Length: 341
Image (tube, rainbow, N blue to C red):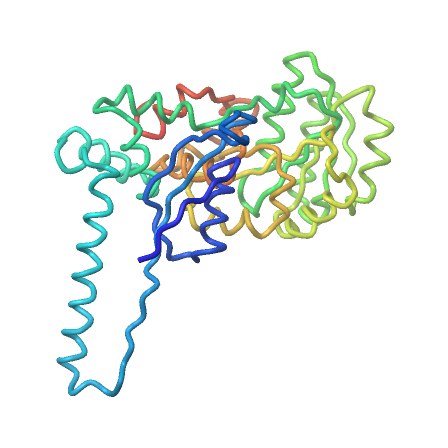
């Protein structure tokens, strides 16, 4: 068993280092905040992750005598590995062995869909109470009200069916209620229903709607409209990867063009993460979760918040426009993730 510590500026960065060196089968044993500068001088918060991987291989000098001998050999190896893991994990999360409350908290997190490794780390950091667990989760989750951001444009990205058009419509009403002028742009020219919905929205808000075919047309529109209004850009899910790359090319490091990525909260963590990794995710500024009214677990919100290392901007709780949208705060999210309201 090979064990090693990895340090990154974020939890995701440290996990990426683990996967790069030890592979996807590595086991996360613990994580903690550390000093990132030389001689312990704090430049910014960093995260230290301790991971382990089995680097042994069975050396076979010849064929086993029979199938039974081979099975017995594998069982002995598994027994030794499990025994080693027990001894390794005992000093890391000792309260899991002696505290009934800790075990209850761990089981609660698992039942809500929190990744087991994240659940173990949360239990390690929290005390024996639900309130302590909430406080730990609140510290982990970043929140950002993107509608209040000072920017020239907001681009809504994500897979098909994630609710980009509906969410953008709700945000347009939200910004109008805050006395902010908006202009609408659609890159989804092939879906007639999407364009029709935005035309209806532009009539209600008395704002302009432009339908364009390529990201290359956006810089000119932003240049013309930046001083008068914030441009909200709807994108199709079928071309998400190409659109993400084009945005990266046309707006490299441009903080005035915010990218918000929509995630369907009914998806499991692995499926949502695959969609996220298929685009230029390094350019995304914030994430938003849709369809909370249809989700049965909210632990994946914590998983994806940690894995993407992006702040949450919005939560949508139903299809009604302009209603059913919420700018979350950390207290609300902590309650939601552990199964509360």
